[in-house]
Image (tube, rainbow, N blue to C red; front, side, top):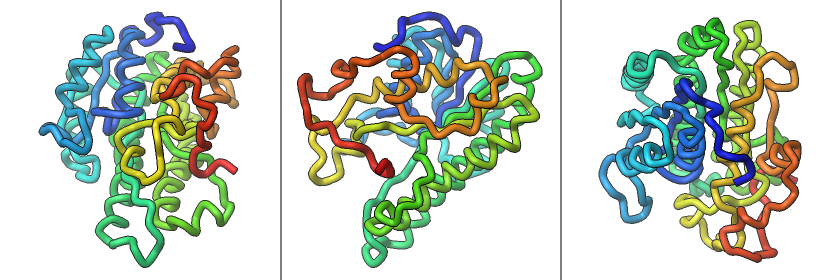
Length: 284
């Protein structure tokens, strides 16, 4: 790990959407190891052979890492269920101090091969879900700010790169991910007077998750482990809200770690010694 295990988040509650596997789970276990109370809001309660991990297996991993976990089954496209989950989380732990908008849907298809059902899923989860989760958590984040608890919103979304090369192969997916990034752009300015930081985090390279394994041609030796995103997220969420440069930023995991003195990334490679790590989408 890039940073030593400390209790940076002792007494703080972090709400993570889609945290039952992959990057979301890696972030949850990292923050739990640093003392955080973790709320994971995800749909999976029954094992899926294609996508391993459920709410309850994730909760066990999070608690084994050293934090407390409240697993809540919720589809973030359902604003009523989402609001109930946020209210339950705040009541259970006494508030919410950070939100990680991790839940996302991906479909890398050209226009003719994108069913409208998949289009609606990506916009429903990525854009609507991110906006709705932020809206639901906002009153609690405001209370956290008044209590001096350094509230943050962190969206796992890319820099807003308008190079047409990133639109042409999968217009719908790109628009959906950029919708999450546009929430960062707007919410950072909107929430600044409240003392709430809003940032985006995106990986420099492909990250080996169950979702990435379903993309043809992506091999373990092309990827890094989700741990690098978890370490970067921990550093971002522990920043003081006050400085202007700590909000409204589109951050890359490797850059964040380099700013904190990390220059050896070999331990993050999925396959040790691999020299063929692929750059992630949306980064020229």
